[in-house]
Image 1 (cartoon, rainbow, N blue to C red):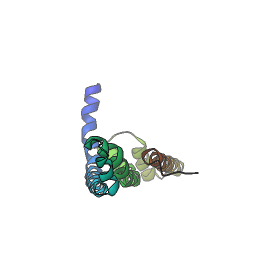
Image 2: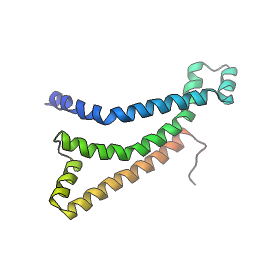
Image 3: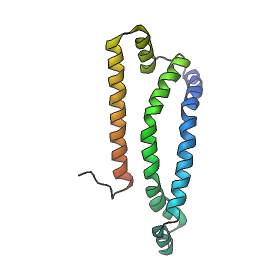
Image 4: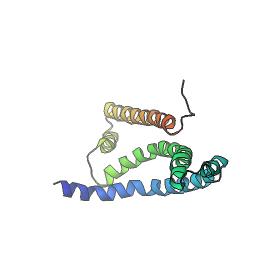
Length: 142
């Protein structure tokens, strides 16, 4: 059932997300505190913009760049963690397939799973670069 599936998803999701959540929260806070002290933030407030608009439009856009970088970099550890989580919780998936292939020395399957993980990682880095241009229009990839 759907509810049973969602209940079985809670523990693996919490296990994978807890470490990254602490890192991203701490980095977001320090990045925003650094951005809030900048001159352009005071200028935006002096223009009469509301605190909310200043924080979201000016602060969050500039404060998110290091956070996006870390999330993109941590994606590799999430992939590795997913392999371990699939093995521990006995979930079928590409991570478990890779572990089974390694234990059976099935080299074509090992190469295929490594290729898939590599492609996912490359696409993730490409998406991070695209998100950079959306968040900060000053960044251009010509």
